[in-house]
Amino acid sequence: QLGLETRILGSSIHFEEVTTSTQKLAHKLAYEGVDEGTIVVTEEQTEGRGRLDRKWFSPKYTGIWMSLILRPNIPPTSAPQLTLLVAVGVAQAIQEVTGIEPDIKWPNDILVSGKKVVGILTELQAEPDRINSVIIGIGINVNQTQEQFPEPINNTATSLSIITGKKIDRALLLQQILLHIEKLYLTYLKNGFKVIKLLWESYAINIGHQMVARTIQGDIKGHALGITDDGVLKIQSDNGEIHLIHSADIELIPK
Ligand code: BTN
Image 1 (cartoon, helix red, strand yellow):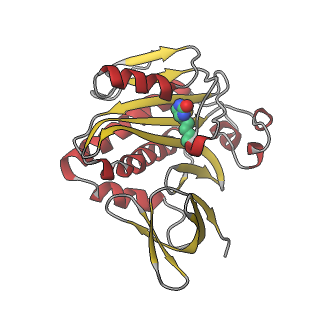
Image 2: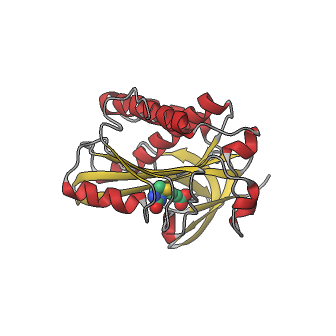
C-alpha cells in the first residue's frame, strides 16, 4: 500500500513483480490511451534501459524502478523541461526522506559525492508539433550494497543506503517523489518553467564548470553557461562560440 497523497500522479498504478522494463510497458499503456498520471512500478527489471541504449541494472527489491505517463499540452521542444522538473522532484524527495543533499548533473543524473544514485529517461510519443504522451522513467539505487553493483559501474554508482548507512523505506520514498513531482508539475502547468528552472539551478553542479559534452556530432569542450528556457544546456567553447546541447554525456573537468 502506497498511501498516496497525490491526485494526478499514481491515479492508476500498474505494479508488476518483475518486468522487462517499466519504460516499455508504459509506452504500450500510453499508446493504448491510459490516463495522465498512470505509473508503472516494478520490483525487478530484466531489460532495464538507460539513455543512449545503455543497460540499467535493476535488481530485485533494492531500488525504485518506475515510469510515469504525462500528457502536458506543450510543444515537443519543451519536453526537456520535464526531465529537469522530475530531477528536482526526486532530489527534493531524497532530501526529505534521507537528509542527503543530492546534486543534479545536466540533464538527468542525480549524484551524491560524485556517484550516480538516480537516472531519468524521458521519451515522447509525439507528432511534429504536438505531444501525445511523455514517458518518464526513473531509476533509483536505494538499498543496494556496493558489492551488488557490477563492473564497471561499481566505481561510479552508489545507493542511498550505502550513503546513509541505513535501509531506506522505498514505499515512503516513492510516495514523496510522486508528491514532489506533482506539486512541481502543477506549478509548471500554471506558471511555466521559470520557478522550476530556479529550483533546478539550486541543485545543479555543472553550471559554471569546464566540461566536455560528448554528443553524437562530436565532443564540445567549454564552460557551461546555464540552461535555456527550454532546458537545453548552453556551453561556451574556448573560442567564444556558444553551443546549445540537446543531448550529450557530460564529463566535468576538475579545476
Ligand atoms: C539513465 O541514466 O541512463 C537513465 C536510466 C533510467 C532507468 C529507469 S528504471 C525505470 C525505467 N525503465 C527503464 O527501463 N529505464 C527507466
